[in-house]
Image (cartoon, rainbow, N blue to C red; front, side, top):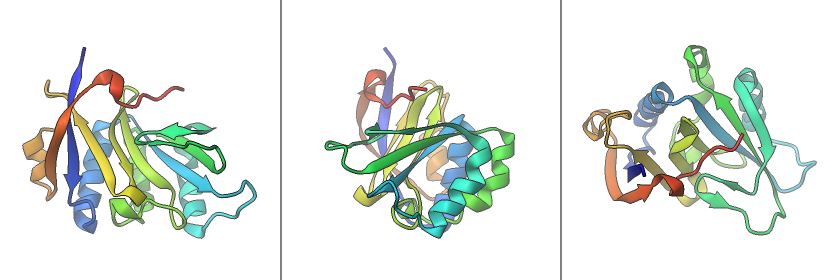
Length: 175
């Protein structure tokens, strides 16, 4: 069974560091997701949420109402959460201006922007976040298929080792 080293990524509140890290995540991933929240189904979304949704629409590969996404499980079903998953290919870098409207990991949050950006490789959430909780987790295999810790530290972030995690305990996309 595959295991991952789980890290907390420190430094994502700095604009330049976050943008560099986000580019690394995009380069090593094949998909990413955002969660679109509403208290009520007929609630109007902010301009920031609407713009990001529209600008990324050409990359959408899945959209569904969810009760669970990486790092979060809704218990009562009272609110409306839609997780939208986007493909990453060479053309997605054309929308870096869209992603870089958000100048910190912790700003990916309701009501200004969509919530909880996460990145996937082969259906596994290798970077997950919950902005309002100031929580993130980076899951790295030790076989070299993901960036090395020293490479990530060189862009200005600090990785804090938390624990080892079995692949079965990491969020998987079900599309």
